[in-house]
Structure formats: C-alpha cells, structure tokens
Length: 126
Image 1 (spheres, rainbow, N blue to C red):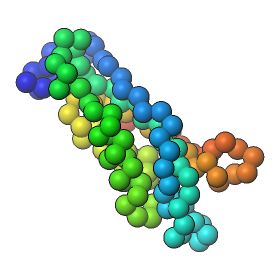
Image 2 (image 1 turned 180 degrees about the vertical axis):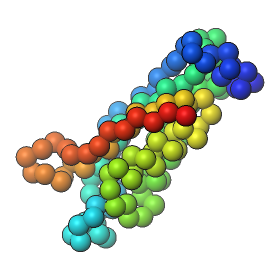
Image 3 (image 1 turned 135 degrees about the horizontal axis):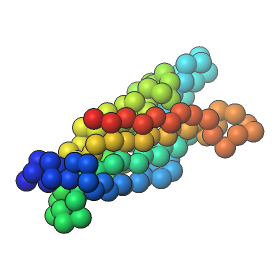
C-alpha cells in the first residue's frame, strides 16, 4: 500500500515533518578533552515525505520514533565529528519508508563560550 502511494505522489505532493531543537548529551569530538565526556548537542531534522493528502494515517512517519532513533544513535558511543552524527541521522531518516529527503542540523552548544552553538547542516536525498 505504501509503495503504491509513493509512486502516486512522486513529483507531486510532499509533506514535511519537523523535529526542532531536540536536546541530548553525546560523547562527540576529536579533541582529547572530549573523549569520555558527554556534552550538550541540539539536533534539528526536517524530513520530506512523499505523501499525498489522502494518505492513511499509518503512512506518515512517526516523529516520536524518529526522535528516539536519533537519541539512540547519539548515545551509542563516541562520535568523532558533528558531521558523522549528522550523516548517521540522515541515514536513519532516509531508511524510513516514505522519506525522500532530509535536512539535518547538529550543533554542539558548549563548544564556544561566545556562541549559542557550532555545528553542521546537511541535506540528503534518496
């Protein structure tokens, strides 16, 4: 059923789900002082879904599940770069049925004392 809706919607209608300012702690960074220490990270995800307006509710992506998967990835162990975390989040989102594109922003909020955050933004598609 989802495949039929996907083929019906390609190039026509897109729905976006947004997870904004998902806060978590992650062991992330390449500097020796960042190893073995968790630091605050903020993640934003915008997933483009090929979903026509008449799609049944079970077609849509569950933002709760996506957020939990992102948190699990961030908590799974040391990550060298914010770029690595962003790529992993993009892979998780794109592996979700219906997601055809994803914009991910990852920021370390305590990296620079005079900045609200430093990080990376990526956009990936199928």
